[in-house]
Length: 105
Image (cartoon, rainbow, N blue to C red; front, top):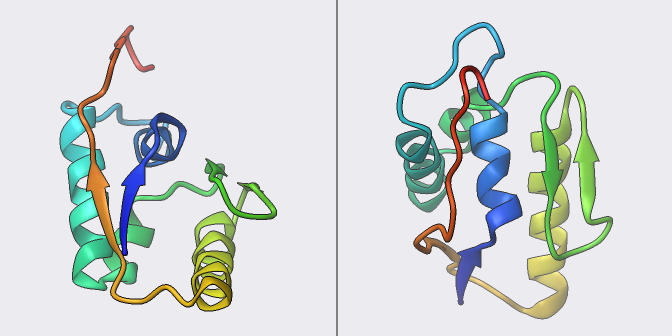
């Protein structure tokens, strides 16, 4: 099954960067997150998440916030995939329709 990251889910990886250091290339951070997930390296993907992460995705409960949000999202992602009989999942990053950078945001 091939999954596409929506703009909101892709924003999760950008927003997850620590607020003390804005990423120099937000798209590279998103690609690093996608690549980590596709390699099955959830530890590396989780390392990109800040304690105040907010994740929005298409499956219930649709929102995850704060410390542990990534782990909870990952668990719910696995439950949703199992319920739908999905396996060998792969995230694909589409071209963003808009990217705005302003200082730290």
